Length: 271
Image 1 (tube, rainbow, N blue to C red):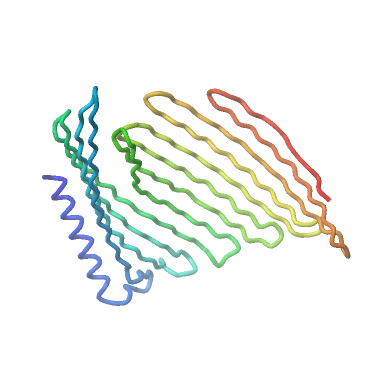
Image 2 (image 1 turned 90 degrees about the horizontal axis):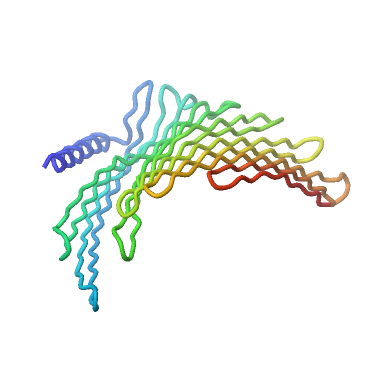
């Protein structure tokens, strides 16, 4: 009863906020701006009946799934458009699963997820731009001969873009979290850092990419961790007055996990 009450209250609040914003094209004052929201509603109904009969099995299972999701999307800025702009989507989602079977008692499970997708961009007209982002969503994995699984995914991070003509650079960091429940319970976390640099003068077009990944999986069967370090340098030189180009590449990789170790260097020249 408490979950139903929370569901109704949140739905009414969302409708009230949307109705207030829809009164005009946008809500704006001197120091911030909120664009007219865009609304979406999704309702999904699914019935799955599984009957099996044989010498050693006699089953009749019925699963009914109801899913409702409300999307509210808007954008705007704070203080000044040149300082920070944002895009925001709120996606509250409710799911109810009703299971009936001859082998066990009737079960009903209810799930609520406050989904969202947000991106904030700072100083987009400057030579240096910072972007903060994050989102959360829920998905379902279906199994033919077992209980379905739900995955709650969350990721967030930041991206710094240095737009200098001599050496444009993008530095990004992100974290990914996945929690799977149902037929198979597991948790996966991933931390990723990436650096991209490029230089397009004198010796041709040169690009450098450095990637660091740390992935950790936890489940009832096995715990594992993978740390990966990779770097690559690519240069494409165009001879003046000729159509010929010289491509040079060198790469480095170092991957370590619970079960194996991999290290290597590779490169090539192509004229």
